Length: 219
Image (cartoon, rainbow, N blue to C red; front, side):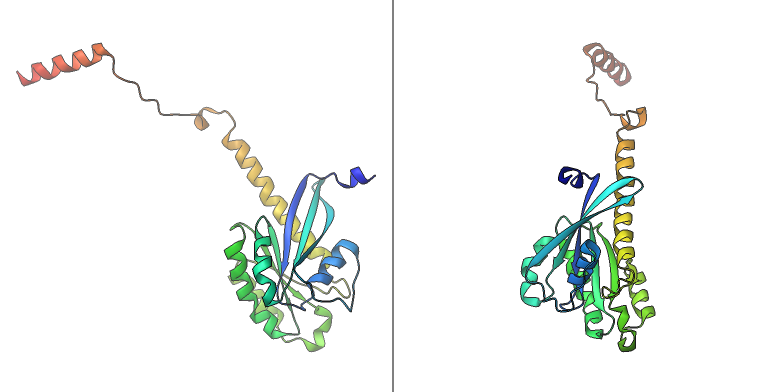
């Protein structure tokens, strides 16, 4: 049974980034184990968990990395951005400072990650609507300006957690599938894809005729 659990068609690395305390670890545990820990401690360094989903009858295995939000660990975690094909950039809707810092996290992500990484802006703790300090429309506008997808979630009551991860994994799968089709098309053996310029050295007779022609012109 364990061997079957390891069978998958695609393996995607996704990172969770954002300030400490925004709920990254609980988003991870809610999606991968359907658990929520009110007493969860801040992540030190990096930890990850996996879960597989089905997209277009393909098994997508997500390897989700939870990066520490504290400043003192950022030098360590920046190395873990490499190889990531997706990122959830998380802030707390009830703490405006965590939203303000999104721009810095986004800049760091784009410095260290692949330029084609799929990024989703996630406003977590939507259950704290009575404490909201980040308007939904403001965050949505920021996401649109920076070409990010956007969603609000609650790891506490599970709102949109499944949707967030499934959407980003489906988007990554769509991009990867299109790239595979394009790569196959580029190497399909058709005449247009195999045209090469061939330089043919002139024969001695051709050189002789050219020389005779030049001589007659000069005469």
